[in-house]
Length: 298
Image (cartoon, rainbow, N blue to C red; front, side):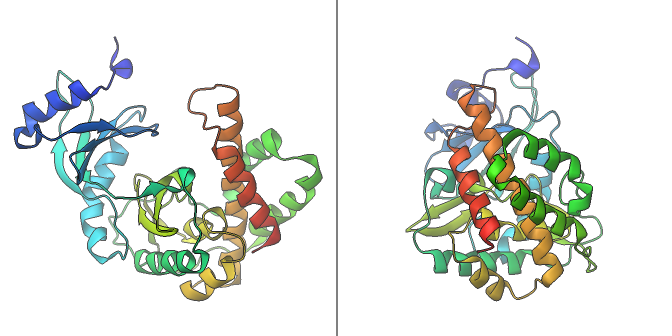
């Protein structure tokens, strides 16, 4: 079995804990469904083990180790915070990290019924996150750019999944985002991957944010796209009123990026229906619902 094919099991997780963090080895280990680049295992009631799986480099985990302890104390929602580091070894030649567990249900398996509360909660979280980042903060590599620099990705998703009856409307939203002025402020902290599997809900509203592996310093518009990707219809205006920092250009960029993220979710759903690796059948309906919200602008 090659390194890339190493099977991650509960026994392996326990063995690694015994080797490197024996005081945690007696806690119950339970697999968490989902995940692609990393695989998650519950560790007792309050911790989780994040195992590098398909990610080709440890960069994303190392980024979380470095920066989440800096960001977490000033964020108004629970986020996973590293508490122990696992080093590559003969038993498992990749990185793994013990982190705090964020309770709740992933939104791609749950729902938001308290839309106004969720809009206010997301606005407050992003206000707290979107502050000027230090010079040594990571920068975006393959995401987070102005929509005009993301046209290849958009066109790929557009050709794959956009129904003919809404193609012109989707194209108009994207073209408007491409034409919007660029971000002129200082680079701010951006989560970079706010989609339904990376937020958790409880009691009908947002209760936590997870998976910060794509965080970067740059234009906040990618996170602002969550107004349509995550929130129920009719709450985007409330979100932007609460956020209170997005000018017209930022909203135009965010709406285009929300369209692209919606198409990505639809493509992942299509891949899941076809049984392709990494596909998520239940993401298709979530993506189409988000796209409908984008087109209605609400």
